[in-house]
Length: 303
Length: 296
Image (cartoon, rainbow over all chains, first blue to last red; front, side, top):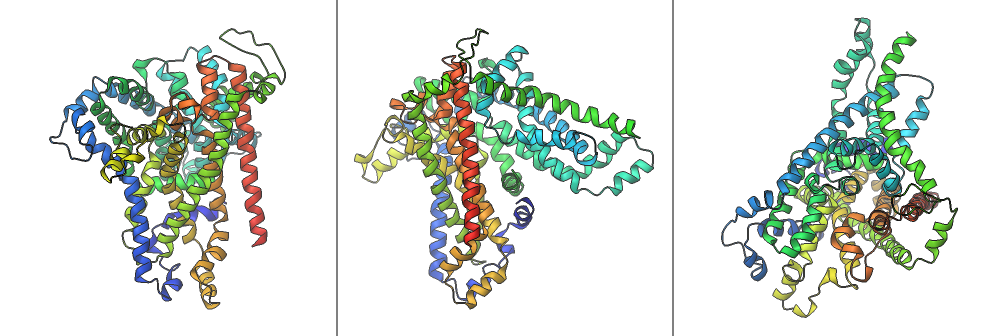
């Protein structure tokens, strides 16, 4: 289902393909129908956007305003809420922890996955297929099945509560999809350039790092975005593998705060913290919006 | 030559294979064995008890309570999400070029998909909050103050609140998926239908839906699997499974048994049940959609 399913995503812009609608339009998509369509879609869009907007506005309010005038704009922009969230509520520390873990895991994932996908896609050797399907099998199982044994494996290696432990586990669980995706990508690359480089006497390593990897850049970007979102948003793995509150990652720390701060009732800092937490993902989304949409939907059709 | 080849293959494959083997394959393989042991606490003593853990599940009220909630979600989430996203994508893709501003609908509705379930859950637990929540505030403003609830503190509402959030965050994703699918359908099919005098309605059910089979398959499998999970949302929005465990789900119950109560053997057995359920679900969806194709 991959080939037929993914091809149209490249041109997923509705206004680029009026052809589909044309015959129906010819009979007239009435004005009334258009208005109704807009109304329905707009209602949903407002419904989706409203909680986010409410959150951002609320994060500038005082606790009094949050309680007693929920529908009014803040009387002044309380930037200090963000400072309090960043330092007192440790959002800053969680943010940094997430950054360390995800950066490490992304580098390791992309390196391991591209090398392995390349070797499996371009070289014939006994056991090649078996290895490939072993990696694919990881896409099928719910992570919950592995939780208990995984915890003990990580504990026996003395990696519980460490950044290295999280990095390597994130990588391990990102490999199946990444290898699968890049395998297809390396297969589709033309071989001539690499062959020319070999004739010129380049070592197999140089062929990979200087020729093939640059050619695979679009695939690496797609896998990179996919993994960034998956790893930045990861919750269950740090929950069992990172018991040390100083090293909580962002999603874990936020869940912890939501429970703890609720009792302490520093609502404005909580709202500010939530807003800060959303920023990196929002930025990635705004800049790579179409690529993110394509990457995630292509991933769905292939997986 | 051969020697050369393996000098690349071995260092390129070995690190991945090692990491993957140790942290993914080995735990999965061990899980099947752990589920057949009685293993409590951190002792290394794990007596083999056969299928005892699975027998225990049959009488475990809390397990069935959680499973019922998953079953309900398994019906509600895929149908609600697919229905809404089909409607919206049909309005955008078949509304023609006249539907200006469709871009903004797509961008905004997709956004929750990139946020973590934790962020979404915390955000919505604020929305539903009895005092500071915007939902009760809204009801007060429009004069329906009598409808105010504690929502997440109310056993009648908590699971539905979580279902709403799950649908809210997924519709945009499947909308994009379906729009792409609809745009890949060849135009002449619709031309033929128009010649035959088919209504837009019939063109949708007769042409669009059957040709979206692969996309629908993906949507049902994905939403089904997320209905079997729901861990993060429940963990954040309904601490300990909510009031009277009214929103407990298997994944959370399993996590609780393992990491709060140290009942590792029994928890892993529940993990095995989760695996079986997801496999059955995938096979079932594929089977059902295959049959549709023959009818068409």
